[in-house]
Image (cartoon, rainbow, N blue to C red; front, side, top):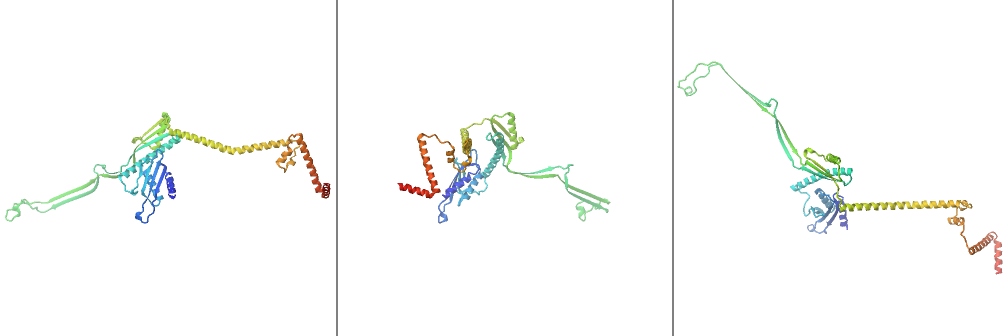
Length: 407
């Protein structure tokens, strides 16, 4: 019994999610064993029925799994299975852990969820606005977004020339060499005769002063350089397309107004290729819509009938009281119109007495009148005897003794 109550509470909690219309929860709690090696794990199965046109995200499925695992003692997420009413596997149990490392599939799913969430938000903005302007259910909006999930890192070096074309000097080196001589300068022919003794040396003419100066200058120039490093995060919107279908035919100016409003709400940028399509056409009425309309009409009739019945229950006592009051006032007016009416005589008496005395007696036959006169005479005799007995008890006793003696 406790398990069924827990299953029902979990199902009602899961049905509180926006995309879920119905939910069924089945929990299997095995019997406790003496040894932990023999103990079987607790398992659960969850069946979800989604609302028409709705879909559930992986993050919401993980939330449902964690909710069930936290609500049932001994239940682990890897022993929970979640499917929808179409038989699609939303969460596979059997040892799968929630704490898994990122993979290519997980990243692709996350990107798809981000794209769908962005499109849903844009669609919600436009639909809520058109519902207020045109009426609920009078417009259908779909949004497609082309999102770039590539992560890009860019590094660049930009060289800029300096005015004058020489650049900026960053190093300069100057070398100066100088030699001066006032005496004779060694002369002769270079070679063996000069360097080896015994060989005749040919001498030249005597020399005079000599000066030698040399200067070297080196300057290193560098041009201006800008180094940029940019990291482009994923999720850049490349292009947005919006399609809106409005119930009924649209004039050209009204269609253009709706297009401008949608463009402002979504943030359309024509330079990047964004598009908006607005079309007016008669919506098809399906059998479900007709049934829903008839059901709404029947419900309105039932509500109106219930309101009338409640109103009748409230007004009927008031009307009855008002009629009784009118009748009583008319009756009092009739009594007051009679010449023998005395209000002070009616004070403290019952209504039946008043009616009996005030209303004229009905017509009687001769026998009835004779019987009534006899009764009246007997009543008068009785009243006379009672009056005599009260006022003169001794005389009444003598009269009784005389009657008894005569008998």
